[in-house]
Amino acid sequence: MYGLFFNNNSGDGKGKKIAEDLHKLLSKQHISDILITGKDADDAIEKVKQTLPQIDVLVIIGGDGSINLAMTAMIQTNADLPVGIVPAGTVNNFAKRYSIPLNIDESLQLIAGQHSTRRVGIAVCNKTKAIVSSLTFGNLADISNEVRQEEKRKFGKIVYLFKAVKHIGKNKSFEIRFSLDNSIDEVMKTWFALITTTKSIGGHVYDDSSPDKMHISLLHNIGLRQVLPYLFFALTGHLKNSKSIDHFEAKHAEIKSVNHQTIQTRIDGDESINLPIQIEYRRNRIELFIDN
Image (tube, rainbow, N blue to C red; front, side, top):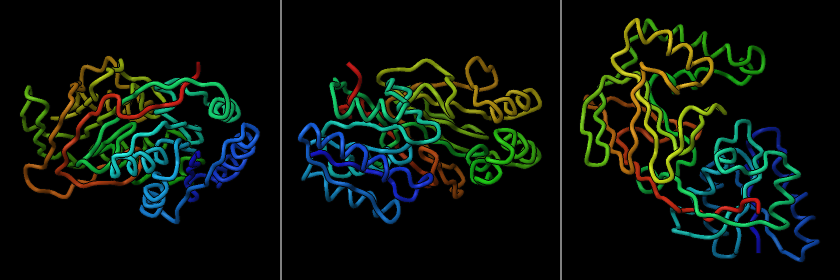
């Protein structure tokens, strides 16, 4: 039995149509399936959790946000079953990381036809929330909150640059303590923090990918020398080779505000948990459908 999960509230509602197309392909292979969705994010997680004991394979239709909901359900139930991805999101960092076909028809054929599996890693926040692509907080997270869908459609990526310029004159840095593995325990005046499990953000490759650690990129103690690299990142998403940004790798991270300020994170593009947080990278956590 295959479970076909789609987020009924994301995108233009194409998830249900893709699920119905996959149902037809699976029927030809004499594979039964069940559709899974929810009224909102919390309901979707609960619906996946309720369905996991009934299925042998979980297929996730959508982008990183939808993958996050389904894998969060797997984390909370300690479920371990094969996962197929139909990358129907805008950026699809997770799918790109593991070379899953971005063409919808090709990804459907992969799931319904010949495929292999491999174990891949994700991160987990506070033992209950999956991080399949990225967690961010600080200035860039604030910018993402301010940009509306209508603005992105009308102006494109340049709107992020305009928002970034507005933030330069504001005191948006936070005193943050980063405890990474057993090697770093330091307070940094942080403008933004970006933690990823993939080698790309916003569709741009920014660093090499480690098989068993998460990447941590920090812009702190910002001054005039950092402004241009910061604006370049806000416009392009490119971090690689920037001397103004510190890079770390870690399997475990504890992150908290020294001054107990309310600082909200964004996980896989959506508003999420407030600091303090604990993050653990779980290598080989997910058995993923891949091309032969």
